Amino acid sequence: MERYEEQPNFFWVNIDQTQLTEREGKFAKQPYGFLWHSEEEQGLEDNPLPIMELVEPGDIIFFYTQGHIEYLGIALNKCYSSKIQKKIVEEGDSQGWRIDIDYSFKVDPPMPMTPNMGAIAPILPAEGSPIYEDGTPKPQYLTHLTYKLGYLLLQICKAELPYRTLADGPVTAQVRTWSKNHEIADVVEDIERVQNEELLSDEEKQNLTDARLAQGNYLLEVKKRYECCPITRIDFYPSLSICRPKPWRVCSSTEKLDPYNSIVLAKHLAPLFNNGVISFKEDGELMVYPLLEEKFEEYHIPRPLHIDLPAACQPYMKWHRENVFKK
Image (cartoon, rainbow, N blue to C red; front, side, top):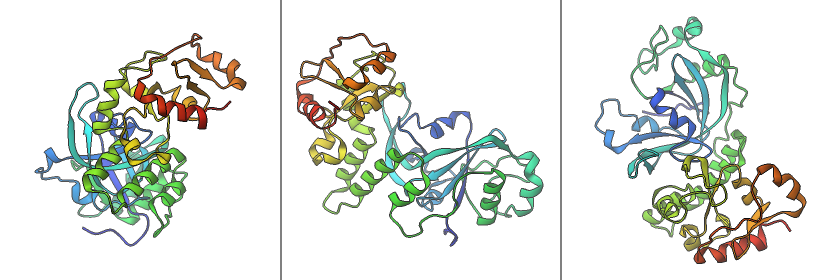
């Protein structure tokens, strides 16, 4: 299998209801989703790994479910080995291969296949088509589309996104071109730096990548320290975000892996902490940016409020108060 010379390449994913969590990114608890293939399914006849290995950053992916194309995704990186939590409510990891996807591009309304098959059917390849001529999906999970078919689908979907990538630029340059969410690009850039660091072993790269994505052993260690958001007491982890008092980019390698450089907050509060609107005193008292005190009342959080801060978290929270919190 080879990529086409035209840029970008196009791919098609058939997903059902049980796989919609991939699009929503629930397993990873990140602002983007992912394609996933487990090592446990390596022996399947329809093995998507060879096609996953063709995907490059900036490639366009069509997501088909229940007779419609609902989303377009933009690949953020190449296929890499990774672990994910098997189920949100169960412990345990599954090893496999993954591609992170930006799902900023919703097809609204979803594009139905049947009414458009008159235009699509004549250019379906004899081999390697993701659908039959009547528009029903074939059983394979991932398909590499011809450029002609991919470009036609892009037109029919009336997608408002560019269809030209920076062919030779760094991953993050492509991500910033495509993505509307610069936080995604920051994450990808951090991971890219880790993967390109020649002095790190493969295990060290994996551990740092897991920590940046808040997954794997790092996530398990954070969960031991924070069972819930200490402000709202919400304990359903998909509704929580892991925040770093001392941001990743100014941390040493040791600090990046330290689960004490973290605090778990409800998703609606995490941006306030990350942008310095709120912080915590040494005794755990909640601090609020004075100019936004009135606005903060809309969150209906009783004040004064104190949380329990682990002793090992204190140096990081001190850094946050001095360098991030708005005074």
